[in-house]
Image (cartoon, rainbow, N blue to C red; front, side, top):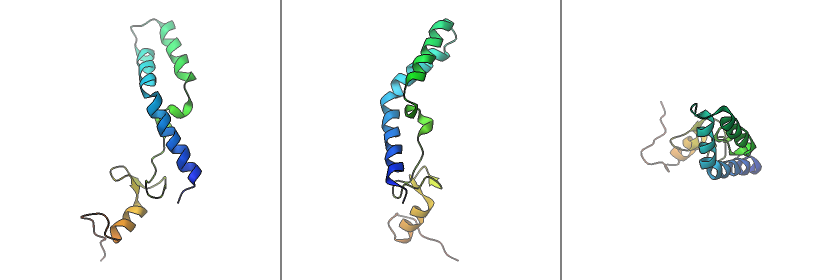
Length: 101
């Protein structure tokens, strides 16, 4: 299991990303629009820089929903390879069988 603080910090980042997503998208659209004057685009960049750093989507780490493990993460299943193997061995994932040879 990962530390509870690491998991909670990541959850807080997810909440901040959701909260500031529309504002961040609007400011990025203004900042990247070449038809607008440079001063207006620069002002949008400054406002974008004032937003919390943790509201950027790149700061969110994919973690296993079961254990919180940050590595070997399957996006489709939202869990790590170790959790996937354990649940498959217990027969809790329909259609998945642990192979052995």
